[in-house]
Length: 350
Image (tube, rainbow, N blue to C red; front, top):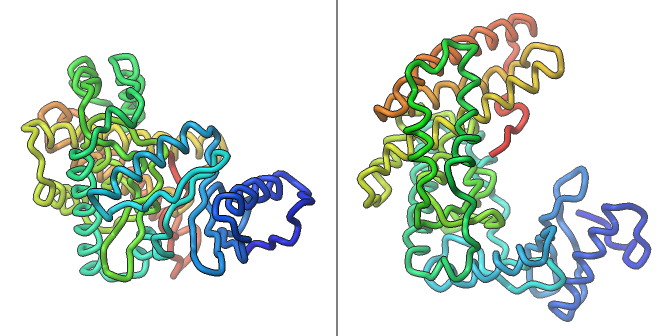
């Protein structure tokens, strides 16, 4: 809970942001906010506001235009699916949404047995597939701005695979052909940031996605790659990949090739982040970081093997996985008998 007694007399930047959100909420709904729930630490942009008669998620966006676009997208989606929150309107750049509940997918994954985790993964894939199908029924091009695409952007993203140079290289990976595939514009909703941290499991057992700030029009495979590459999962990468292949109603014959490419790029980008952070700090990876790096490498290795285009990257990813598994064992030995490494570590960029 956050104290709201300071209203009218902010003491710091967090208080000023809180005041902005609360003032917008009370003008928007015409009634005082009774309580505010927020994670510990610096004030996030996303808060749960509790009124006498309702619970509302308030999200302060850096630009009012972003909030307006996100609100319009949520309004359109709510007409065709319940897999996303309902927009309750925008005031002064603060977006108000329906509360989907507190049970976020990332927290649930870490507390369930493998069998239950598999059901959660299936529900996550199914929810994302339904969301994409529903988005196909609305005029996305009238809501979302034109996405930033093209060979230059694709080439910058693909440079992430250079992290494999220290682990056996990239083989005969055709960077030019991969750039052309990644630069294809696509026509689907790409929610962006489809990690488990952005999903909530409702009391009805249905999973719903939130946070559409970065939504664009593009290749739907990018969203599934974001989901599958998150190190919160403990299921084998091949099982997760097979879920997407089996549960998603993909019509594009190249969908699985696109998925493999997006997945290796995202896994490589997150792996590069972890390795660079450890190098800048002048230390070896902690147990948690080594475990996350190994997991990302294993995801990349499996994905690379699913397409002729990405196959040359498989060896580099496999060697990276062995390298980080070795570091994980060494970290465990330094910590002593019985030590367990925490899962997750530093959160790489999505």
